[in-house]
Length: 275
Image (cartoon, rainbow, N blue to C red; front, side, top):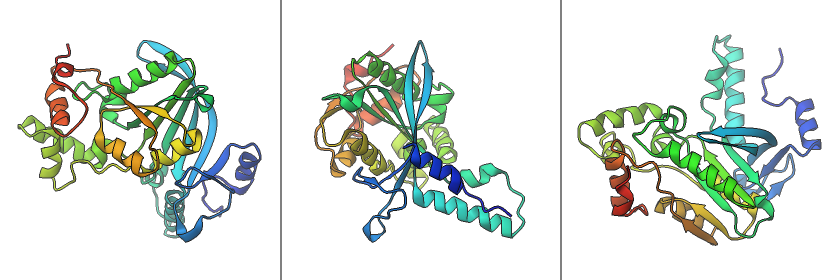
């Protein structure tokens, strides 16, 4: 029986020779395809660039997409697959892929040569990004960030972080927090009512990806979130200029955004007037 692997050896060898499979450490440094960093430090595998035409809201653009995943997660899923085979388990392939958080990098224009490119680190949000929910501003933030990047002469980067749903608690728990919010709790109180951290997201891999593509050059980060700024700075990104990204304010999400403001986000009272 063929051993399960996402990239069988011949495909992997082909992608490596084409420069489309690479591995980096958390400093963003390029590693050899089979080189392990010292002391068992994490490794991020990258696939790309993959041409990706985008259509968001009222505009279209062209991006190059890189898929990024920690090698330990790939190993974990492949171990699970072999265990299922040995036990003759009848499982959908989605069962194997579900534990794996695959982040994305969208490179728009030519930011790798720019002196001070725009960057958006965006946490995935199914309800906002896909369903267009107005209970948050996530989908509008993503589209607005991409649009602003396309308007830059040199373009920019979007780092799309998987596994960040509900500020890191997952979609099921996020659904429960929405019910608690409908009973009067704010978004942070609802997380804590479930016994979960108010914000458990980890931006370590986002920092590694920025360091890999941009090095230590200055860049402009579109965010309102002080935790994101602090995490990226602690990972070595100290030459950031912060640009606010307050968009999509409406009657459904004004209370949610007010809670963010109270939590320290760079949101002013005037920003909450919205539409």
